[in-house]
Image (cartoon, rainbow, N blue to C red):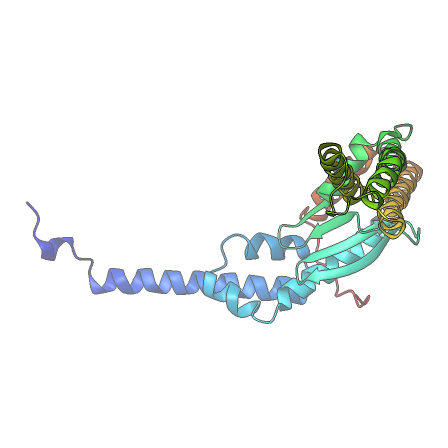
Length: 284
């Protein structure tokens, strides 16, 4: 059985191993530094995402220096390849937003993640594009029905209230008449009938009050209608936006599938090893 002393590496072996590791770190650092100086994007990604030591990564990108460099390079290359894309916003050091064309209502639709790198259609937008049916008016018709139902419901309740008020009118007259014909003992001649009329009146008034609570006044009704009309307008506007976006996709990229394929191919080409390039001074 070997002893613990026999299992321990010699000082020379430790020294050689340490020297090799340090040498590799220095070599990686020099290669990384050279890639940055020459703005060799493919090499930067290869080293930064691969074998570069964690501490070196954190130090070199402490203030997002690497992120900013990669964002600028990718931005320039992207707009050179897709001239119809419009930069919208840099929402983080590594996440950029773009849109297709210059339609003033348009939202950000293309996302670029510099850290991967990855370029893709924003998921919510992609889902809307793929499932959009320009002839489908179901959402708008549903809101129209809700607006109509408000009027119908209110008119129905108003009719019921008026009907009950018609029934209440002769009862009130009868109660008033019987009250005026009280005896000298302050009692109505037919007390049982009188009490029955009072109960009927009470029930009718309760029913009327209940219906009035369910029925909107003009202010409330108009406010609810306006809310539905705003929803209607927003849906119309959003559908028009999607229609315009899809027409721009067709104009510039033939189809949605072709656009996705072009974006994927762009990243593939962008990361291909290539000859060192001189620093590009184009601003971002």
